[in-house]
Length: 244
Image 1: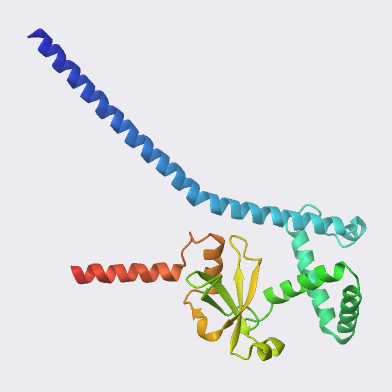
Image 2 (image 1 turned 180 degrees about the vertical axis):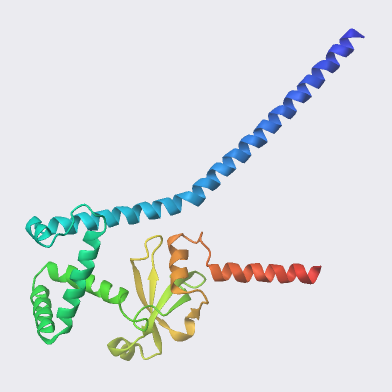
């Protein structure tokens, strides 16, 4: 009889230990999930603000170093106030823009552009940077207008591309068809890619914006466009409402 009681006591103790272990395991899983959720929430914000802060300090310190101390003392410009370098840089760019907009300024800008384009190695880098900045700061009608789908590099495989404009000039004459200039970016670096001339009938336009398409490409397809997510959620809600 005593052996049966001892065996039952052992079983009860074992069950109690297993239950306690399961409770601690669940608690550990919850703590780990909360920990990773905290990283997911705080890391992007913290990294973004840190990078912005470092860029701010770098520009501020660089502008301060370019200004002679005599000028700073003469015009009573403080040396230690954060943001003074940014303000001076903005004012300098505004003055340069005002000068370049005038007749004399345009002459010197064209002269400098002509001189730089004659240099052997520097001209290629200068032309590339100039095109990039002109594209970034240009009007919307010159930038990528839409996000599209097309079959590339063969039938059955689809990629996301960005629509530039209709193909014109010599390329259009040689192809003798209504073509579109489509830029197909690489993942996860969308600054490189391929310029493809695609027949207009083979291009499928998407509802997502160019910015959402870029996020989709950079994230390797992980970050789904917000509009698409909203549509999927609304459709699922409608289905649940109909079922109920």
